[in-house]
Image (cartoon, rainbow, N blue to C red; front, side, top):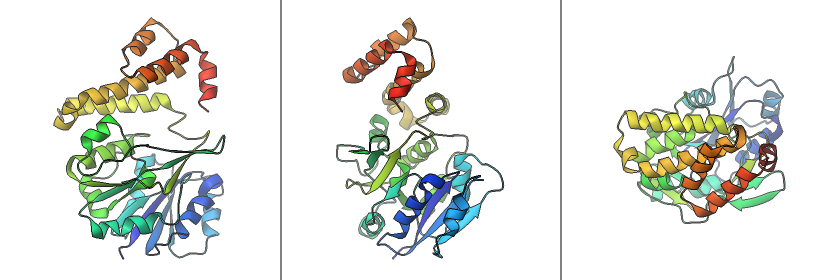
Length: 295
């Protein structure tokens, strides 16, 4: 059995950390190590980790607060497994997750596996499936451009692939996962598994959820970088990225800026009719009410 290194990055994650670690230690697949990288936590995260008496947990600590993707890259340098899996500290796995995935690396000639996800909305204790269609397999850059469908807590890959691609870009604070996956999808085969055995928690402190302006700015920068370097894959799928950029811009303006005719024009230009109607409703609602409804 191939050894799997599970990368868990933590900064003040005491609220969910125990649940996260328990879901890993309860895996039916036993040949694993947990690389827990504590990114200068000031809460009880380290105490919680040390209460777990399992030598598969390897705790590493930073002596200063690092950017998320610097911390994630640093964690992976300590991994000894042939395979790398990721689990964010506020997410968790079904006990069958690793065993169902690890076997696939022997059965199929793929470098990267990903899976569908159950989204858990903490506010109302509700679950919903992340994607309701069959996930794409193979060279999937174009399909990701049309509809990005990968959550990092459901990603497993060969460590040599991570090293070859060059790791996560530390310039990003939110879209580093997206950037890494898009780079990987240019040259490597992905295999999708539709059974959702991971749980992604949506809560009031989600960093990406609460920072729509950073999300929009980083995605804008990413698109500009692809244009500047004349990336052919990007150029071939430019219309899909432009649609995504427009979506993020409208969402950002609705939440953070005053409503004006320029915003109204952008909403009118949005190609998806159902989403356009949602934007129009948002345009008519007070900004504070929109923020409240999104909590």
